[in-house]
Length: 153
Image (cartoon, rainbow, N blue to C red; front, side, top):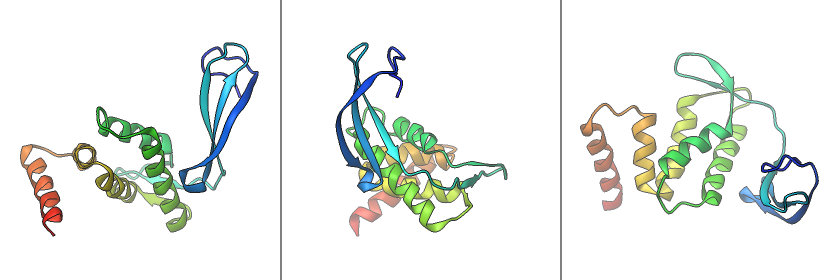
């Protein structure tokens, strides 16, 4: 494994433990060149599912895209990287169990929002505003009303 800081190719594993509900192994590594530490994840390689975008284009499912969207939605919120990784793992697991070759992007977004709604409502509304392409403040108000109704029930 190359060090992300010095690009050295000599490291040692300091700690290994399961992550993402047992679907990955998290390893803490130390570069023997620059002595800095970093984390890697090891996952089972699976068949690549293609995501069907709104315009009909198909592209390989990429968990990094989900993470990028989650990080933007959770910016300045009390949400840890481990919590984000748990959501990503749950989305991947849902897709792998429910779809063999293709999944619509709409389904991926809905599963992400479902998990994010349980984790942090502000981050959920942020994600929903981009994913559902809110046009004006009324769209935000409508989404907030739905959240309030859920709390009342």
